[in-house]
Image 1 (cartoon, rainbow, N blue to C red):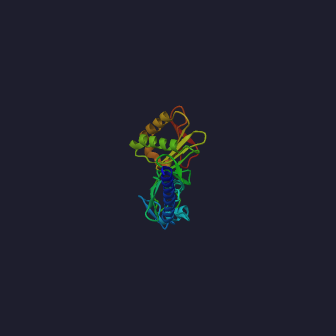
Image 2 (image 1 turned 120 degrees about the vertical axis):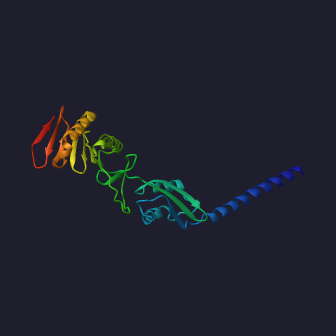
Length: 240
């Protein structure tokens, strides 16, 4: 009698688990419906909602609400031009919510890309009314953080001269040059950058600043003084 009771209890437990499993599967199938709506949020300044919807739609096409891998979708969405971070969440009963964060552009990079605040290049892609004036930077692959950091250093050194650094180049062999106010190029070279820059600021304050419109470039790759190339001249004048 006791054994029969135990068998009955075990059979009842098994039946309960089967029914629970069947009910759970039915519930899963009922909940795991096709995704019908995608909403986009975030503080967007450059890219349009239409552009984002076109790029996000293929990531969820044919997917269902419960089965979709949100981590995978987020990783793929990060590859969309201008996006720096993406959050994805489900919304009852059949929608996904994307919270998007744009890149913050601080400079043009190697003619065809932009740099973000970390010195990382990204493709500009289609944007709405992107007319923000940014310096033009260039350098070897992977040098974005270094070039951006040196730009910050230059801006601090030159702020008392009322000069804008409009271009900055790091050559493949490690030499630096920059342009101020969209006109005068300054050639620094590879070594003694701090002392050469100090020599430039002294010469600019003493004389060259008043002659800026006549200068093509200033070459600081000399032990002492600076060399100046003037518009309309092929010779270079050296000044102490």
